Picture 1 (tube, rainbow, N blue to C red):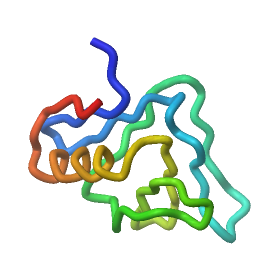
Picture 2 (cartoon, helix red, strand yellow):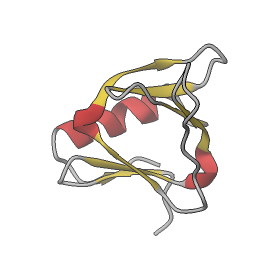
Picture 3 (cartoon, rainbow, N blue to C red):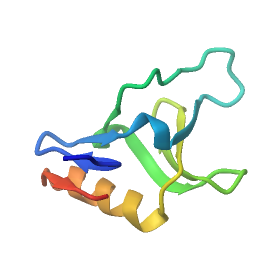
Length: 92
């Protein structure tokens, strides 16, 4: 089954690569690149969910990385809550 965002009972969030708009660490030279594979995020490493300065829905990670996505805020929030609750679900 196709998905855009899905969660696992292990607290992970999978985001389809084509819906990730940006993965960056502001004020740093290093970055990360998504090469067609799903981006896997541990929900326990997410500091908070909000919008970045460009207006994209963004997971702000405890490590300082920002993971921006082309999804609705409600979908990202549902994925975050399901992953934190160890609920396996396809959000979209």
